[in-house]
Image 1 (tube, rainbow, N blue to C red):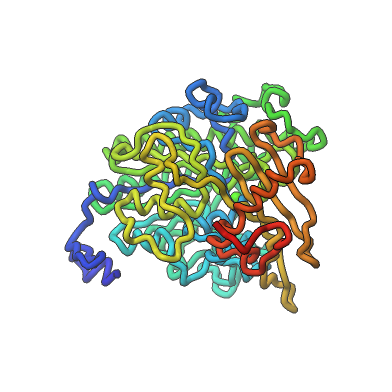
Image 2: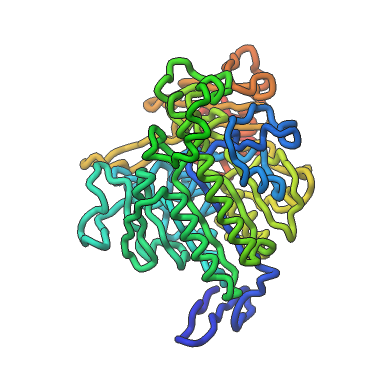
Length: 516
Ligand code: CA
């Protein structure tokens, strides 16, 4: 229970934590700092080190031919997951799961947030990781892309208006009472002009910048880190880079020095996956710019790591590098995300914590809602994990050199679409269009018909025999495997309090009566 994080002027913070009064600062050794770096749309295979023998033997894919020297070094110091999955691989739903440890129905964020979708908005009454850390004495900071709020006419510079004229409105200002414990704020919701970004600061002042956004955000991050050095109070810092999110079409989107690394490489050498769709020519042409954005993020991440070391904060800071979802980049379909294809589903997840985690590569199947309880546990706050959390604390699996016997064997896949609309055309519910399961070996996604809720289509892959998912398996010819995968779904859907479980959708296929 939080009494008061900051008492009257001049006094030290006074926080009541689980019955103990900390008349001052939390013990840094027990409560490490946490930095969570999350570029948007950064696929796992886009990191160079996966092509090195020490890493390559753990994965079934060919790494993209990128230059990521800082991530490569970081990987040697971290626990590197081959199989972290973004359960609902779309911006706002992922971010909602990350912040709350709940699946989209619980977080309130089932669809991407924009002004047409009042039904998709981070719930005010949910307890987020930042709420818990803030309550337990952490200084919490958010820099970059937030994308968890329903835009309203709350422009602090022009009261009564939206912050942009687009229809629907995507970007918005997040006022203090919606920041869930984040004390330091330098963020926006969503905006895709990478060289002219803008941010609202802690006090709601807007800053319009003429610099590539990750470069600027790394600078802001380093300023923040310097400000924390003397404090002794642990901090939780999230950095939401927008690139390599689209657009990735020109030098307006990335840095020329990074583009130069790729501009003369033939597309056939940049796009190494055998599942490239030959019809997606326009998308293929984006590859040099996408990879340039990846390399730019790598450099800015490297600057943050260097500053952390220089300030002597690296040993007692947990650093995570991950993403909200991947990017198909001309494999299979045009849509870069929001599909069960591995390019979209599989995200980087590397976690460095010199005090407790021995660097290694792990095939632990991580679901997004597992991140909050795992980080809280690593931060010495296992007892503070809220009962609302639907993910698992996977700390024991990260600490051992391979996942333990009871480690997750399957992750839930979720895809939603707009549901019902009100008289003004606003989306007031979501339609739970596809659900599925990803195991080490298989991918299964079931899509239902909007009117009848009967099975409409199936995507079903053997990811061992067919790692590029070129052959959609016949259910008829693989019925036993299909049934064994369907059998995994009730327990996952129940845990997620998913509408498929509540309404027993496809009960002719999914054995709801017996969730494991
Ligand atoms: Ca995104």
